[in-house]
Amino acid sequence: MPRTAETASFQFNHTMLRVRDPEVSLKFYTEIIGMDLLSKKDMGDFTLYFLAFDQGQNYKYMSEEERDKAKSAREGVLQLTHNHGTEKDESFAGYASGNSDPGRGFGHIAITVNDVEEACARFEQLGVQFKKRLQDGKMRHVAFILDPDGYWIEVVPSTLQL
Amino acid sequence: MPRTAETASFQFNHTMLRVRDPEVSLKFYTEIIGMDLLSKKDMGDFTLYFLAFDQGQNYKYMSEEERDKAKSAREGVLQLTHNHGTEKDESFAGYASGNSDPGRGFGHIAITVNDVEEACARFEQLGVQFKKRLQDGKMRHVAFILDPDGYWIEVVPSTLQL
Image (cartoon, rainbow over all chains, first blue to last red; front, side):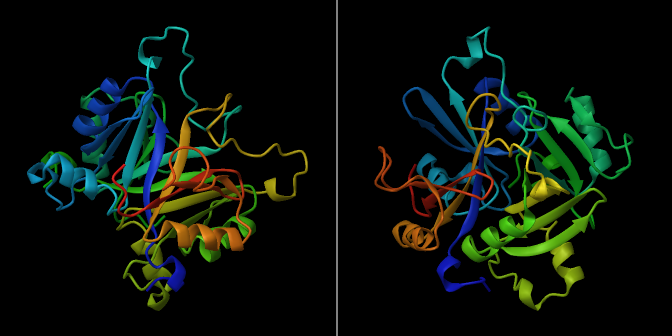
């Protein structure tokens, strides 16, 4: 039951990250991470992309309109914002990961996986960059990979008692 | 159905944000936003807090251990990281919201609500700071509030076709 009646309908729908090149990021989040693209919204000088894991929703059988609507009815959505032009601007310095100064604040997004060793072996094979491999550091059951913009993605076993 | 068998178990479990003062942030995210605190992990010189909306899980009837375990079995979890000492360090400059340079990258988290006007009226009444009220700017159906560290929280109607 919700904490209060006033917040009973609230859901943590999405997290927004800016990306330099949507072509690269969409390939990464769909083909490597395994999310579906639910919606693309052209907003003039920027475009929004909404992605999420299909967990029984069967997005592939939905119309574009149904998928778009479905994105507002769940949690765990990733919103990528592309400010047009960054992908071909050679002077663009890139986005901050949030994990070093200046710019420290946001830390990471995390995905839970049933078999973290298998998931990491696959990421390795696909050429994904690691911030921390399973065997690095103290926490041997957790890895951190980097997305194309350098944002950290924690890879955690679903059963982890951390 | 999942995109690929290899990623079938993947879930977008959490988003991590650093917070200066956990007492202030926990009060905000539980009492104002309406999340439940599922788990608190002391990691030495920092502490992790895991929060999520109760959407039928009935966290209040779970044991501490059950709640802790439940946090890894869902999406939409917010992880707050408190590096000990920031709350009383007067020289601490605060965390970056990710929305201005230097440090631009992360944008916001978003909550969907059934009645955005009602939700915003309640936030107003509770003294929450707004980045953008419903009547400001072009997008009249969306508001942005600020959390205690200045992170942006988008407040979006659940039925929004954006």
